[in-house]
Image 1 (tube, each protein chain N blue to C red):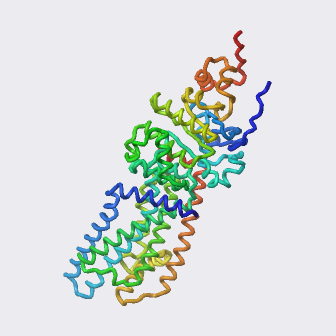
Image 2 (cartoon, each protein chain N blue to C red):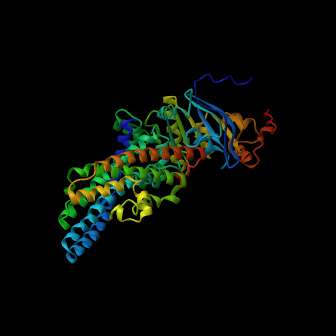
Image 3 (tube, each protein chain N blue to C red):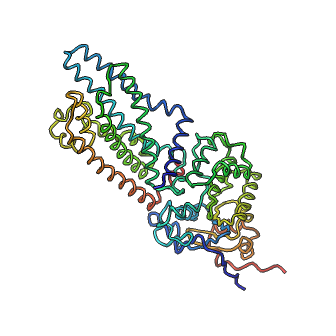
Length: 260
Length: 265
């Protein structure tokens, strides 16, 4: 029996999104829907098109063709109002290193128009167990501390749509576990739709409701993490990832016989 | 435009300056050194030439101070942008609900405060050190100041657009671009004393009218009002062109996917 269609509101939608760089397609007719309250993982090897997709979705790069909508509105024409309801965190961007943590967070709280910003910052810092970092210089934080400060920034405006680009990259297993749990907790409590990229399959299995595997800009697998493993000849998601990264053509692979 | 967002961005620069005293020192360091060199040259010439010529030499000091106002205004815009690039914060700003007009406006405000600080320091030192009172320009100072600041903002937007397009490889343009104009805007000499071929070029830029006006005010206490009108009209034109260029380049970098390179530079 086919899975029943998701009836939740679509908050982010890409339709036939294509992005070319010098004639090379980084994204090739990429389509997907993200529903409210859903965590969608975007997976693929380096160069598969994840970052290009994320950049298009954030409005940093314009697609060569195709359509992008968020909250039912065309992204490009409604960029500011959409970004007001969204947020982003990446392991590869930083908040100004020479400011104190609270100063950076206060600036972004004011940009997003957060009511009672100091209280909100204190609450989020407590949630992420970094209240003690408030008066530290941002540039002197460890990778784990910095990631959690970035997450506070990402949760500041109570986003309905959150894009997390490798949020656990370079974190030790303990901190990565804490980050995953907090993301999942906040996501469930606030019914946030999250687009999540990671190379850590444990992240994906724990956090994502559904995943999309990209290879050379095209979707080669889509489904829940457990379904994808079940439909492949692999034993776990990491093996599926490696096979897709190496040959990418898993779509034609025969489904694994169910064990009796 | 949302003033809450502009004030948040200005607050960020305020935090930055208060956290980094060296940045405040830099606002005064080069201008003060320039002033001391020009001041000493002025005193030397005054002592060794006839008094009438010695009076004219004061134009150097006036020119130097007003030039620095324009340069600092340009720096306010270009360096504020570079601060975001250097701290890898640019993407955080561009994925926040910040319009380019709000971003640029915040750099204008920062530029205004930068030149205010520089102008106060220079006025003080030139008065006490070299008996040159910049306030002898009286109320003319306000339109002079405003017009040079507007042209500095235009140059700042042009510098920023070029850095956006070519990345940090073009970083040095943030300092170099104003000096492209220095030889032709008659900072230290009259337009009529410039080579004939360069005089029409000089009149194309607002600062020329201001520096000519400054010398006229210092000489006779008055200036040609038309000069202020031409300077203001040209400034409106240059601001519009620079703003268009900035937005066009920003859209181009989005189209070509170049904006994201600032995350890794």
